[in-house]
Length: 136
Length: 67
Image (tube, rainbow over all chains, first blue to last red; front, side, top):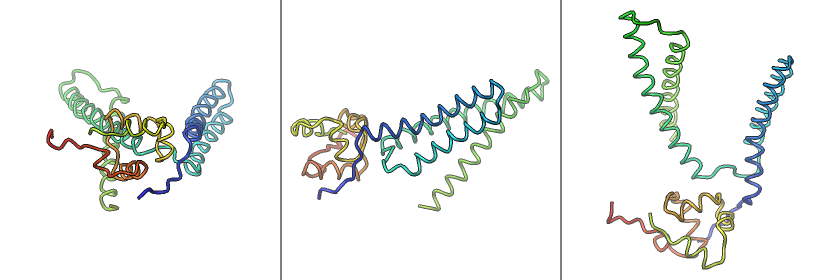
């Protein structure tokens, strides 16, 4: 019954995971630094090199970078994130509506934008859930 | 879920990292399974049982009476 498993070594997995996240962190930090120093185009290019390196490692590495427990942790964290976003949207939208009706205060454009962002997030989630159901 | 993974692993003189390599997961996953904090998928449970050459129910005790 023993199944042949092509198991990557733990150190290889750790090394590739470090490379994966390191590419984004280094690209982002260097990108910000170059923008601050007055080289915005070069900074943006370096940022994209980091992003592309991340995608390259993630897509083409021969090592399985994340296992089933990582997926379970991500699922739980996503649930918590959605609950927090839902509470923020329900309470925030209600407060914004009341504020505009009573004239208590003017809702800043950034807050309205954030609330619309949450709405967009849930629309994307609903579409993704529907697609996933159809695909399974 | 209770399980016998730690005892069987130690019986074979394997480290958590060693067992993780054998079944294709991270050391943290083995650690979480041994501490009862993570229930493995059916596929991983089969892989562990296969590695230890036993049946799944000899390795894992779902404690169905308690639920």
